Image 1 (cartoon, rainbow, N blue to C red):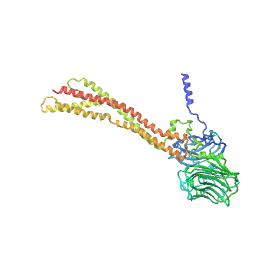
Image 2: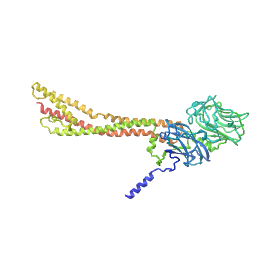
Image 3: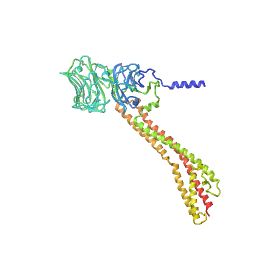
Image 4: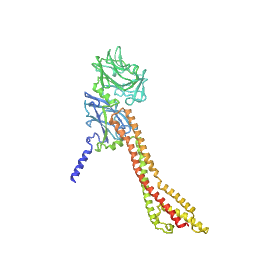
Length: 573
């Protein structure tokens, strides 16, 4: 016995998921780990990157929105040491549709590692908002335009407030992140007379996500010109390149209709990056440069996440940005399991599934639960009713078999034990019909001698009684058939809608890794499991009850035939 207890204890220890015992603040009830993968499978960083604003995408498949504030004001991001709060700002938090886009400044990314982690804390209804775009970016970031302003009054999110003059640029709802700027060839963004945007020998960085409408165009994605000198990012006949003070990088193919990350840095040389990788360079140096900054001259297409810096950003920094923002989002992975402040780290799979079920799924599950309650109630009530009916029938048949000449003997005085017998009620029908004819014969002073027509009439009355008793025996059974046939279809409906919402959410936030898809799909399948959970017990119960009903119906039919035979034997010539 002692050995068995030790084995059970060892199994329990192994089964309990490990967790970190540190907890940043006990006022927050839950947290999730976020892994920043810089290995070859993730962002593939060859060098360290510091103070990188990474995009964290939260959606139905990776975050329990029901446990957080509906406006996201209780979100907090903590460094991997579980002590240091990180600067962040919320670009989008939609608690109803369960979508969120949050920019978090990560202090340090170790290259080629899967150990870079941060925490997202949530579940504090008293928390005040901590989102602040002005402190998320460092002092070298001079412009950040998210294109998330639905009124198309696109604003700078940095502390400098370098908002552009918007000339005919429209808001597009289907950007890489929350929105995009739509350029029609005549639209542009202009920064005029902004001293903070002057180019100096300290360097410069431009970056943006670009989706050209067609290749047959010559456009300036970026232009900073003063006199005969300047810096330009050019899209020409389906190819992208950078030009600075007469020097040009290689021209790189950039197919239209696809989001691509384009970045250009200038310090001791001019470098073009495409999707975070160096694609070309030229011998050009940064010098002092004033004049207007214009984005989108003659461009037809969309831009998103437009950024300027007054320093040359390292290649690893740009690569990390591209990897966190892109549709693949290879850098950022939100853990499937969360942890709670009560020490129950590593939620069970069942808890994870229920936490990821969407509102429409809960509606379907709620309907199925009502169906389950009704079907169990029908099975219980009908089971008790049939058991009592069958017992009363057996009691009556035992007494009926003992009758000799007088068939009316059992109706004299009544018996409460026979009140629930369906066969006893058929017997009473037969006796009423018999008495009715005997009274008629006495009125006409005729002998008690039933004719064949009278016996057929009594049989017809018994057949009608059997039909009514059968209807009584089968009453409410239709509710079980509805549960059997309707439950799986309702569950399937919930699953299909849940899968649709999951894929729509993933498409909206652009996070398509397996860890983000799996919880949402698994949660959608909960509706199918609920439908089967309703149908399977109802199927077993229906088959059992139907067999009981069939047995009672057979007893009734046999009794009716036997009663007619005894009536004919005792009361006909």
